[in-house]
Figure 1: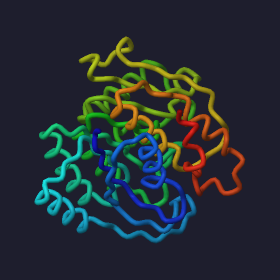
Figure 2: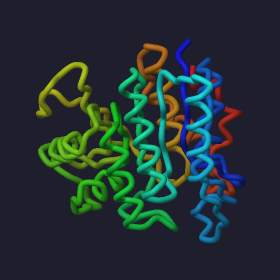
Figure 3: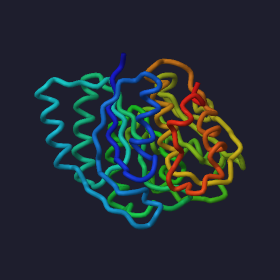
Figure 4: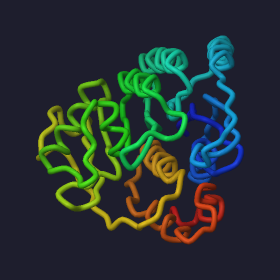
Length: 271
């Protein structure tokens, strides 16, 4: 069974990031270890939060794991608390990739055209470093724009512009690319490029999944999407592209949406 390491933040109040991903991957039977990039009191959407950066701890953990000979078949990275931290994690990922480890990068930074509370331009630079070592990245449309320096258009993009955006992310270093929550020619979509199936990014080599958007905002859905994608990749089974939408629909009337989706209640929805 393939081993996965999650390098992402650990949020105390809200089912997001590591706490959203771990139950899904465990349910799918993926042996998973975790390494927190930060310990955060609550979801950043609440406006106020306490945060403890763990960069020194990460360095120490990498050193101990090397001495113990620990190895992961894949590493999934998320929130990076600083440029220094991103440099350290990127260097570790580059080192592990040379040993055959696959690197999956979710550049968690923002949505709907804006960065999340507490996210700065330094974070954007850090995420560019992470993409440079990625086998697969999956930013949403907002994050893809910030990383590539592309103007965000709330009305969406044309198919040509979407393909160009995929190409820019690939040029930064990510071999394969998935962009979520991107309006293409008036239709909410997921667009991607699979480097194992083609060498050049064109309108003929990208894939498109369209969907009808549910008018609500629930943090953590990107983390759920990431976990489902990674779990299916590690198990070599087809991706169930409608899973996240079903979970959003079930929870769209939650009183406190900032707490995220209580994923443990809905694991059977992933079948």
